[in-house]
Image 1 (tube, rainbow, N blue to C red):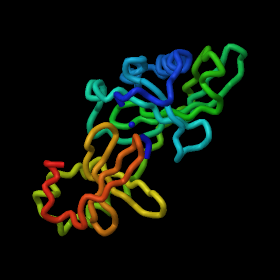
Image 2 (image 1 turned 180 degrees about the vertical axis):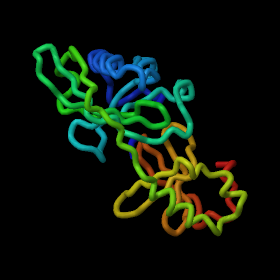
Image 3 (image 1 turned 45 degrees about the horizontal axis):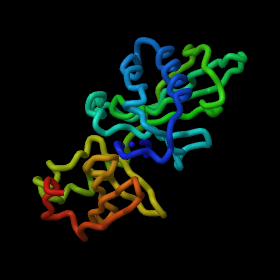
Image 4 (image 1 turned 120 degrees about the vertical axis):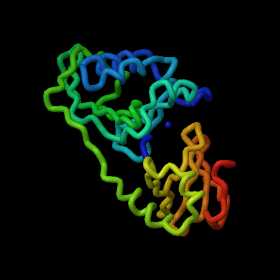
Length: 214
């Protein structure tokens, strides 16, 4: 959904955007101190428009080699809402951070971060928006008749659903570079690749597939 490599990015991120993100992270204070070390050109190597978000929403392109350094496995997806930023002209704008597994994976801002210099950050009204994972509950029911060996090879705890052209794909395992093994509603097995975007069908059924070898 949100979401997120060490390829040369097609969408570069400027030092000005990184400086503004760093200023915001510094202003978030104690609850989010783990975000500040992530704001560097070594880790954030680009950004691209989040096609599933509002105008002003971006997905960050991250250096895969450094992801494990910052990853907090099991930490849920959430959005830090209502971050107010004030620029050097005393204009106020709204910003939000998208965080998954402890990593800043994207953001939304009501103005392009290239177009201002963040002067101060107000956090009086910020809150976290969390998500009830109905997709995970549905997937658990779907795989209830699949072999125990296959289920143990899946990452069901962090599963989410991606809808593409009116078809649902449920992630069951990360295969790196922001790509996933997924199943559809019929438990057909696919690999989902983000750069370039591609869906490859692997098998008509999930049964008897050794996911550890994919």
